[in-house]
Length: 118
Image 1 (cartoon, one colour):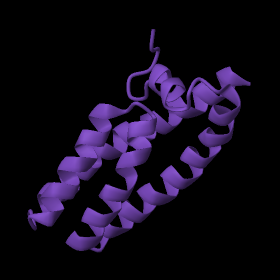
Image 2 (tube, helix red, strand yellow):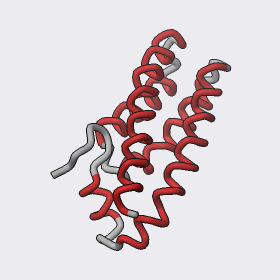
Image 3 (cartoon, rainbow, N blue to C red):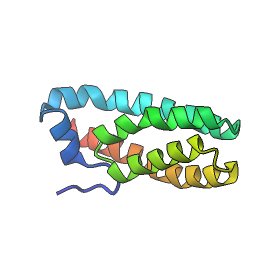
Image 4 (spheres, helix red, strand yellow):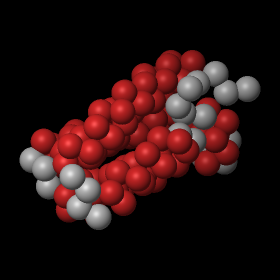
């Protein structure tokens, strides 16, 4: 049973072929690169750059898939699609704020999962 709201520990294990050593190696990369990519997306929101928002949201989606965070991946997909359609920045910013809460929770859950693996 998956104890998390955003990530899915069972999906992570399946995606990594149930190899705990690989999982232990990948989690710090997901945490480091994921946060870095998210910060780049936040900067694109702040500068109101539709092309960068689209690009950065697109770049984060595979990590969400690996983490089994399907609902969050779909939110990034919608943000990417809306940025591509030049949706007003106010709407993109509101979407981003909702995504930010979920993303931060996902990273907290991933840290918790990492501790439980040690």
